[in-house]
Length: 121
Image (cartoon, rainbow, N blue to C red; front, top):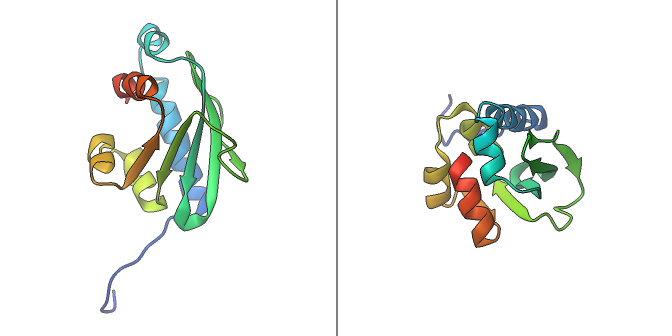
């Protein structure tokens, strides 16, 4: 590294792969537990440093495949996270609670949705 700050940014492919790893982790949650805490919702994940928005649907069986979108399209649960933090969350080197508490992960959702998500994240 040559002096200065190391400013890295994950690629679109790395961001998508991170989202896929997070979605796969939901399949590790006991299906009965998942069904108890999840109701069907649309979910968006905005990655501002890449100028991307991914959308999906969460339901009792997990998450559908993430798709690129023009906007959050009125998603009921809206996440905002920079690409490197998204990769760190997927790799579990950054915990959701720490990312949220430090402002690195922003979550916009109803209080009920937040409480349900907390049980499975």
